[in-house]
Amino acid sequence: MDSGASHSFISARFASCLDVTPECMSYTLHVSTPTGTSMYTDSIYKSCEMSMAGISLYADLTVLPIRDFDVILGMDWLSAHRARMDCYNKTVYFCLPDGMTIQFKGDKGFLTAILSFIRASRYLEKGGEGYLAYVIDRRKEKGLSVMTQNSM
Image (cartoon, rainbow, N blue to C red; front, side, top):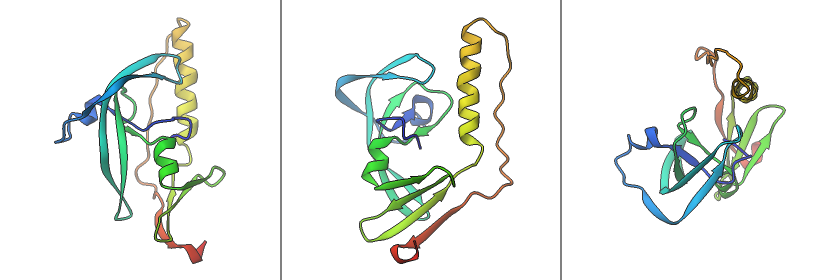
């Protein structure tokens, strides 16, 4: 999830694994990345189903030639699902139309890793030499729970 992204995206590599053909948009979308590069696309997958705690949520995913992420859920998706972010606790609450709230608790070190990546990219663009690795400890539990509106 990226509250800094206006749209939701899917990597071209990951999209190639889907058994669905993307639609062609009537325009070409120009996307600026955090590293200062630009990408262009005119392909979109409409109403892609995702499951969170056994609940289906849908997203329109614009195809981009990105490598670091399979899917980026942006403000279009976050606002459509009435998301509230608690940045301090790294928790996102989704308020569903039936009154149910889904709580997604994220990886505490993730934002730091993204910022480190951006900092390292800028260093490399200036001619520096470096090696970058991003490691996720899958042994740690990731919180995802479902609550009713009354329990908040």
